[in-house]
Image (cartoon, rainbow, N blue to C red; front, side):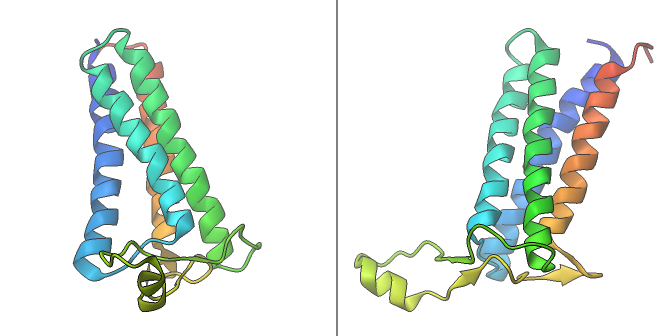
Amino acid sequence: MTRPDVMAQRLALLVPALLLGGAYISQYGFGLYPCEMCWWQRWPHFAALALALASFAIPPKRLFVALAAGGILVSGLIGVFHAGVEYGLWEGLTSCSLPPSASVDPLEAILAQPIIRCDQPAWTMMGISLAGFNAIFSIAGAVTIWSLLARKDKL
């Protein structure tokens, strides 16, 4: 693989790993439990992570890296949709969900947990929610990976 391909492969692994890591740190370290749409953004990152890992072992490596970038882009597009719901630009498909609970009784677990709303950002920085940051970093990451794969020069 050329040097840009290696960089793309590493980014395809790092982008979803870092974004998922940030999501789990937010959840377990700061109590920012995910709503249903937050979970929708995580699933494509899990797939991208698996595809990126596969690219290290299974040929054709470039195909797995490109597919991983596709998963990263899907997560970013879901993030755009979620951020639009949070900013009131459009209505979401769901409004809330319950975080997982360790309780054995399902009714007790439901009643004891706070409702996690998809239309209210749990945290923002400079007016950008976590869904917005996921959208920005995911879309930029996917475009960067595909741009590196498209380079013809050998650095």
